[in-house]
Length: 347
Image (cartoon, rainbow, N blue to C red; front, side, top):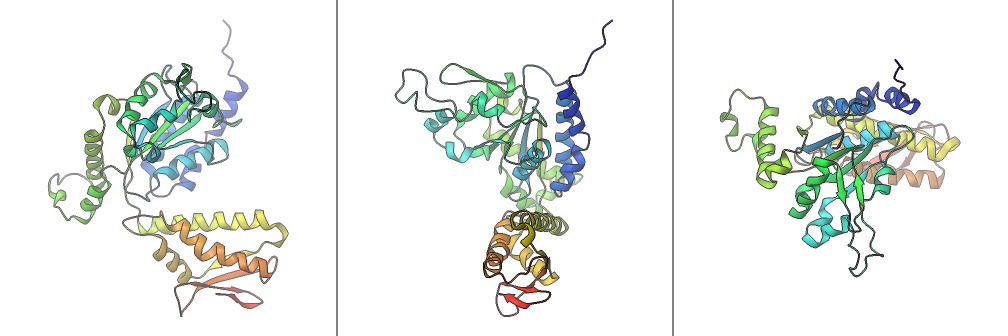
């Protein structure tokens, strides 16, 4: 009897996913349940055991804004393919009107502009999100609740049979794809539950906070989407609001990424950055909140750290190889920059 031979590419992909959960935990803060739910589907695909005739996995990510839903998809792409850009991303806010949904599949032959209008989803674009490291494509429908109802109907065939018929009668095969949908449905009610303003806590006294949030989110989903659509989702994951410890960890990740960026872009002229505890508190106060999570943190770092450091580089006042200490100003809502040897550099 001839032994089964596993193709070399499949062996390489399997090796890539051995520590996938560990790599995701380093990139995603405070959402261990989501990691534990997603990784088995990737392993199923890399082992060659994913079911035929449907996507590898279909996930709906719920929860308040700023909790890491979109970041999860980006981190998965980064872990599998080496870049968070390896995602076929559809911003559903661009398809709020029924006629706009047609942009996804293109105009059929005979319609005005057929040849000039390229579908936003195509087999070529889907395959382009894979890489030599993994043949698994990642598709993201961001803020799915904002799209017109016809998008949900269009996706029924994708979620069930793994194919999408385009306007020119060609088809797109999603059998080698993980499909993610993010949504803020129920987010306001979740925040009300957490603050216990409406007395939801007493409705199911035996439930944990996570269970209550999941029930709220799932209820909002069932009101918005048809049973046929909901039943085609493999896992509905509800993200909990982040704790202060999680915000601290996210800030550390952002600062590590900034330090790598400085080292790569400036090369021999690069310098190290260090923040005082007061500077850290300032960034956390400005960039995080109970309502918006850590969504604003990247913008705050860009405005208060990266932009002022550009002036240091242009003025050549940060010596190569030096350490720039960053502190909070005692006079205004901004940060000050000091080098170890040159004193005050900028404010």
